[in-house]
Length: 301
Image (cartoon, rainbow, N blue to C red):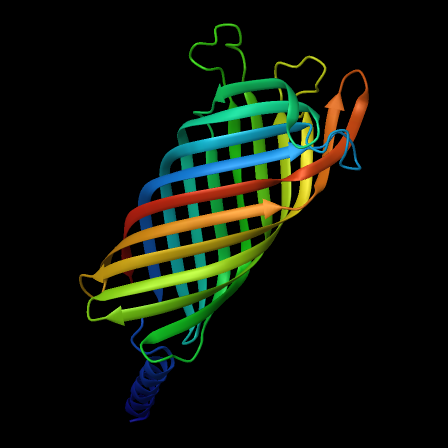
């Protein structure tokens, strides 16, 4: 009789727990995973002045990378902790397949009197971007579900200066420039659903520390593997749009687009030379943009 009583208590406790969980979490999936594959196009430029005061000239050397293109692979994962709280991870990786670059040096202010101007190929390298955020669901606004995200983000490039196909004198050229932006981010997300269709758009901005290091491998007076470093404070803006169609309660198909723009303020350029030690000048700043589109699936558990 005691065992039967304990069994009834256990069944009652399990039923009560099930109602509690249902009330707490509702019918929403606990975990959502969304892999995607697409294509991205990027650009990055930076310049330095002739001295720490930003003069002599105000733009002494400038590097521009354009049409840095390649396949883009992404993954988003969401874990629901409480009805209104989620942990969201979003990451992407892009392998460069083609691109071009230009290196120009000037004798006078405002990009005048150039004394060096060379174009390069840039068909190697990569780009990465990931963030981890806590997401909180705000009160609904009619058909719109707003959410706010707060978290950590890091992104960066590895860019190359490589010889053009017709350049037979510099086949050993493999100059590299590697960037890392890292810092905190905040974003606003708006979600809308109609029957099986849904749309999620977001805008966020991030305050980043910008660090870069370079290897100018064919300049004998520059140290290798690190020829110079850049450091500055930067700001990044990011806009995304996901359009989806839900096949059933588990599977959905998504089409997504992403736009990033980031820039830094003035910073420090440190050049490491073999003959004159470390030389410092003003880093005028860096600018980065990316456009990407992708097709993916979403799986809810």
